[in-house]
Every structure is written in C-alpha cells, then in structure tokens.
Amino acid sequence: MTYFLRRAAQALVVVIGVMILTFILIHLVPGSAARAVLGVKATAGRIAIFNASYGLNRPLYVQFGEYVDQVLHGNLGVSYMTQQPVLTEIIQRLPGDVLLLGVSTVLALLIAIPMGIYQAVRRNRLSDHLLDGVSFTLYSMPDFFFAIMLIALFSVQLRILPPEAPPAQSLTGMLADPRALVLPILTLTLVSVAGFSRYMRAAAIDVLAQDYLRTARAKGASERLVLFRHVLRNSILPIVTLVGLSFPGIISGAVIAEEVFNFQGMGLLFFQAATEHDFPVLLGCTLIIGVATVVGNLAADFAYGILDPRIRHGDA
Amino acid sequence: MATHELPAGVGVGVAGVGAGAEQSGNERPGGQTALRAWLANRRARIGVGIVLALAAFCYLGPLFYHTNQVTVELNSATLPPGAGHPLGTDGYGYDVLGRLMVGGQSSLELGFAVAIATTVIGTLYGAIAGWAGGIVDVVMMRVIDTLLAVPGLVLLLILVNIFAPNLLMIIALLTALSWLGTARLVRGEVISLRSREYVQAAKAVGGDSWWIIRTHLVPNAFGVIIVSATFTIADAILTLSALSFLGLGLPPPAADWGTMLTDGLNYLFDGYWWMVYPPAIILIITVIAFNLVGEAIRDSLDVRLR
Image (cartoon, rainbow over all chains, first blue to last red; front, side, top):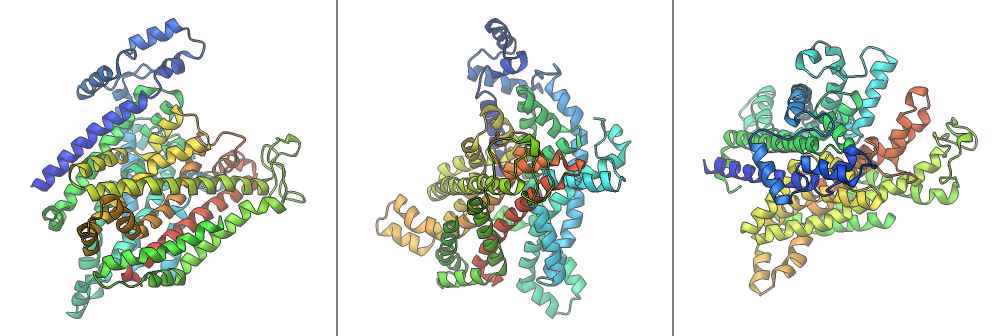
C-alpha cells in the first residue's frame, strides 16, 4: 500500500511542478501578449488597459496564486482570440482527441504485440528482418512526411479516402463521417506500431531466454501454450509502462497529425494558440496534457504494481 | 566529422568493462570483447558506413560540386532533373543536390551539437542525483518528471514562440528538452554502480565524491551514455524537421533537410517530385543510420545477446 501512496504523492508533486512550469513559461516575456493581440501599433495606454483587464500588471507570485486558485475552481481563463473560456474550448475538442488517440493506440497495440512476439520467435530469419526494416523505417520517418505520403497515396492516387478529417468538433459529427477519420487514425497507429513492436520484440527475446521457458518446454508444453501462457504474459508487462511513458510522444505526434489533417482536436487548438500567442489557451492545454500524462503514468504504475508483486514490494 | 566516429567505437571498448562488470559481478570480459562484438555487428558497420558517407557528401561534396546556394534565381526555379542540375532546382532556383549538401551540414551539426550538450548536462545531472541520493535525488528527479510530463513538441512550440529561432537557439532548446532521458539513465547506472566493491574501496581510501564520479562512475556508465547520445542525434534531426514543418525551424537563408522537405511538399501535387523525395530519403536514411549505430552499441553491451 505504501508503494501506491508514495507514487500518488510523487504524482501530486509533479502536477504542481507542471503548473509552476507552464506559468513560468508563459510569463517569460511579459507584455508580448498585449502586443500580439492588439498589434504592433497599439499605444502604451491601450497595452496598459489590456494588461490591467487581464491582471497582467500585478506581481508574478500574486498572479500565480490567483492562477492556482482559478484552476482549482475549474477556471483556466479566457482565450485572447475567441473570448471563450479556455476550459470550454478544450472540453469541446477533448472527445475528438480521446477518439483519435484511443483508437490509434489500441490498434497499435493489437498490431505491435503479435508482431513483436512473431519477430522474436523468428529472430534473425527473413521475416524478422523484413518486419524490422519496416518498423525501423517508420520509426525513423518524420511524422508529417508519413502523413502526407498517406494522403498522396489514398486521396490523390487512389482517390478512396478524403485527405481531411471531419470538420466537426463533436463526437457524433466526427463519427458521421468515419471515412474521413481513417487517415489520421492510420497515421498515428503506424507511427506508434513502429515504437511498440520494437520494444515488444526486445521484451519477448528477453523472455525467450529465460529458464522457465526451457522448463515449460522440457515438461512437454506445446509451443502454442508456451507462447501464450509464458511469452505473451511475461513480455506484455513492460508494455503497460511503455504505453504510459509513450503518452507525451503520442501527443506530439497528434499535434503534427492534427495540423496535417486539419483534425479539430486539442493539438490543432494548441498549435493555433502557439502561432497567435494566445497564452491562456497554451497554458490550459499544456496543463491538461501534463496532468493527463502524470495520471496516465500513475495508472500504468498502479497497473504494473498490481500485476507484478515484485514492484510494490521491491525498493523501486 | 569522421573523427566523431572513431572515439565512439573506442568509447564502447571502455564501456564494455562497466557493462560486463554489471552483468557478471567480479568477472570482467574486457573492453576488447565489447568492441569486437560491436565491430562484428553488421548493423554497426552499415550504420557507421552510412554516417561516414553522409558526412563526406555534406562536407566534401561542396568542394567538388559548386552551386549557388545564396542568391535566389527565379529564372531557373523548379527545373526538373537534367543537365547542370542532376536533381533539379527548387522553388527558389537553388540546385537541389547542392542544397542537400549544405542543408545536411546544418542537420548533422545540430544533431551532434545537441547530442554533445545533452550528454554533458544529462551525465552530470544524473551522476550527481544518483550519487547524492536522499532528498537531493528526490528533488532532482521530480524536476525531471515535471519536464517529462509535458510533451517535448508542446514545450518547443511555446519556447520557439518566445525566443526567435536561430541555429544556436534551436540547439539550446532541443538540448533543454533531450537531456532528461540521459540524466535518468545515468542516474540509474550510478545507483547500481554505487554499491560496487571498487566504488566502496575508492570511498574507503578517502576519495572525494567528485573524484569518484569522474574516475569511476562516469567511465563505467559510458555505455548507456554513448547509446543515448547516438539516439539523441537521430531524435534531434527528426525534431528539427518537425519544427520546420510547423514553420518554426531555421529561418532563411539557412537550409536544412526538414525545411527542404517541407518546402518541397508544397509542390508535391504539382508533380515536382525531385523537391520532395531526395530530402525525404536522405533524412530518413540519416536517422536510420544513427539508430542502427545506437542499437548495435546497445546490443554489443548486452552479453546475453552475444
């Protein structure tokens, strides 16, 4: 139990750290928010009024205290550009992201786990080398280039899939046009498969060298039983942590994919906010993403701790 | 550039001692074994071969193949491959082959610069945290957890907006984001090395912390450090290309493969394939090469895989 409590306490510290970090980042250049919104010709008076109305003229520690207070009350501020509450903007986009990231991650696991085990079993044979080459190339390819190649193939050459994600922000609106979801999901899936399968292959090779496998084979267990009961179950454990740790990478991929496919998700919202210096939106997105990452890692650690007693009783 | 490769191989030899010691307690398969295993690795040979060829292409190429990469020549823009321009010209009239050489210099230099800076900072930070232990370690690691919780690209997008991007600034920003992994790895190594007998012995003869870190811990953690540095080069080159794609890369007139690829993609559907595939292929091959070298070093350090 102390293991779980200690991990939860660590996570809380990190969440507070993320709040401090985002706050510092956004305030590295005070005044530019007013310039960005009002334009370079804004007079000093108008900038002062803008700063006063958004509370940007007060000491930083006062602003931070207020910021924490507001966040705890669910208020992430108001977008400079749209004058909408940031939380509303994020919540509108969240279902789309859960759909995009959730489906692509699950698909990636469904492909990568069998692929990694297959490669480990057929290690150094032709099929292993071929799959290795594919995943290595995917892994080494810029996400945006891969996404655009998919558009070139499926939308321009074959003309079977639309090159843009559904324009809707709501889940029902997106699901009404499932064909438009294929390419964004496919992009993120294949990018994740590359990383996951390489990891899975290494984990399975590790397990294949263990003594208990020799024991299992020696007592006459069929190869199928060995693979499912021993190799799969033991090598799948690290994948739990890997998925938690991959979360930031998946988000980075999503920013790119959403920009390429004009997918109305948080990544696109964030990118637009970054180009428009819309600090409340940047702050809100970073905070939500950071907290989601911490919670994801915590969930992965808990799952791992429950599945593997060595972790919660060890000195880790 | 070629000189960067040799120390890497030698370094692995040194590193093999530490990794070997870790695997088998008192028995140390000498550094020679790790070095030999690494050289025998086909992936390592292919990876190093490609990196050397790329370095020669980017740095020696311009000595023999003279092109104008400074002034825009719209009269000769978007020419298909042919006489005078083996890979055609881009939308500004720059010769694509020549630009690949010049752009490669920025990409490779950025990769190496980020890797070196990352290695130095990450190694020091990780070694100090791991060696100090206790509350210092806890605080230092929570700082890393915090920075790792925010996706690198997200942080970069904010930072690039705040600081105007130029080569040095991008190197600094990429370093600021990539030393975290190295620091974690080195800390893990140092914690496992800390309880070794030779480290305890060094402590017993009165060695101070800094001396032990320098002479025992860092050299023995060299394997993981080199592996992570190699992967950092690949990641940095890829991240730079992603930044270029988002319009936040190196400002003109600087050239890099990511910017070339991004500019080229605007013309892809006009049929100007020569602006897209050459930078894409060379970029992917470069990243693959560094990943191959890194994996080969990692495998050569793992005695179970030999």
